[in-house]
Length: 354
Ligand code: G3I
Image (cartoon, rainbow, N blue to C red; front, top):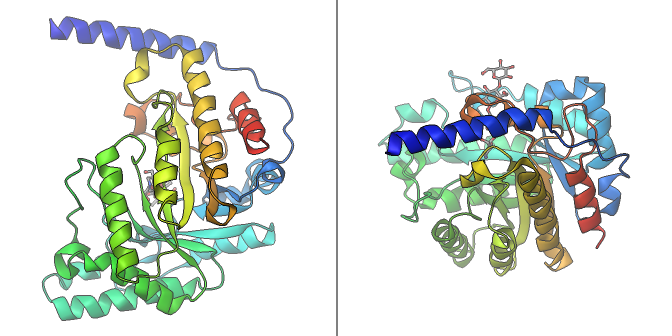
C-alpha cells in the first residue's frame, strides 16, 4: 500500500514540476532600488567570480548594501593543510564590495562542519588545542578587522532535534566553552565588529530555537562580547504563517541585534510539494513580507538587516546538486535567472516601505 501511495505522490510531484517549468511567473516590471526602501541594511551572499559578471554586479550594487561571502571566508577556502592561511579569495570579495560602496559581513570562523586539518593532530591535547584555537580565531578575525561590519563568529552549534548542542572537534577539546572563547578571541582581534551567533531551522523547530536562545543567554550571562543573533531562514514556501515573526520576536527579546542572515524560500522543499505552483509562489511572497515585517517590528537599533542567500535564482545553492535532490528548477530568490525582479521582489519592496 505504501509503495503505491508513494508512486502516486511522486507522480503528482513530477507532474507539478513539469508544469511549473511551463508556468513560471511573468517578470514583474522595473523595481526601484530595494535598499532605498529599507530602514535596515539589505545583504546578499557573494562569490568572488560573481563580481566579474556585470549583470550580477550591477544588480547587487543597485539593490543591496552588504555582501556575505558564500563560501570563500570559511576554513575550506583560507585554511591550508600545512597550517598556513590564504585569504586571497575572501579579500577579493571584500575589496570588490568596497569599490562598489558595499560593506561586508564575515561568515564564518567556527563551524562544526569545517575544522582546519591541523586541529585533528591536536585532538585530546587540551592545552595545545586551546592555544591553537586562540591563534586561529584571532588570526582570521584580525585579518579582516576594520573591513567587516560583523561576523558569524560561531555557526550552527545547535542540534536539530531539540537534544542540545552538536558534538564537534571544537567541543570535544574545549567543552561548550568553545563558543564563548570564540567570541572573546574574535573581540580581542577585532574591537569593532558586531559578533553574531548564527543558526538554521529556528523557524521550523521551536525546541531547537529554545536551545539556541539558552546558549545565547548563557553567553550573555558569561559576559561574552556577543552583539547579535542570526537566523538563517532557509525555509520552504509552505512554512507556517507567523513562524518567522515568532522567531525574530524571541531572538529580539534578548536585546541583541537580529539578522535574517541567509533568506531563501524554496518552491521545491517542505511537505507542501503537492501544493499548486501559484500557492507556493504566494507562500513565498507571504514569507518574504513576514521576514521584513518581523525586523520592522524590532526597535531600530536591533535591526541588523535582511540578507538573501543569492541574487538571482540561478545563483542559489539550491540550484546546485545535490541540493533539492538535484532538481534544478527551484526559484527561491528575489530575481529570476536573467536578473529581472519577480513579484516577490516587489512584495518585499512594499513590505519594507510599510
Ligand atoms: O566554485 C568553487 C570552485 O571554483 C572551486 O575550485 C571548488 C573547490 O572545492 O569549490 C567550488 O566552490 C564550492 C562552492 O560552494 C560554490 O559552489 C565549494 O566547493 C562548496 O563547498 C561551497 O558550498 C557552500 C557551502 O555553504 C559550504 O561552504 C555553498 O556555496 C553555500 O551556499 C553554503 O552556505 C551555507 C552557509 O554557509 C551556512 N548555512 C547553510 C548554507 C547552505 O548550505
